[in-house]
Amino acid sequence: MPKTKPSKPKMVRITLVKSPIGYSVRHKATVRALGLRRMNQTIEQVDTPTLWGMIAFVRHLVEVEAVEETKA
Image 1 (spheres, rainbow, N blue to C red):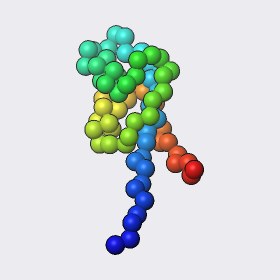
Image 2: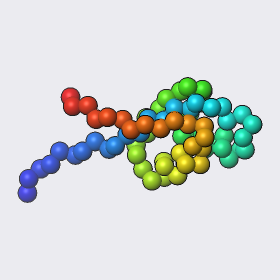
Image 3: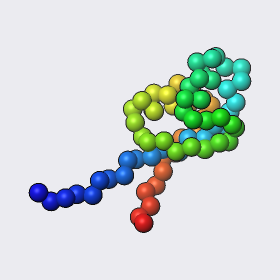
């Protein structure tokens, strides 16, 4: 059986562009659960359906972009 290289998981870059102040506690908790703490902070997360559910809930507060794979 041929060995295959394990593929890197797809990544998503998420940036907090609007403050969650003034929004519900659930929105604030979702932003924190994504790993965002400050305005204009950018994080990279593994692309999963759960992540997209969280992003959809706070889509008015964040910007999302796909991370391009780099060949090293």
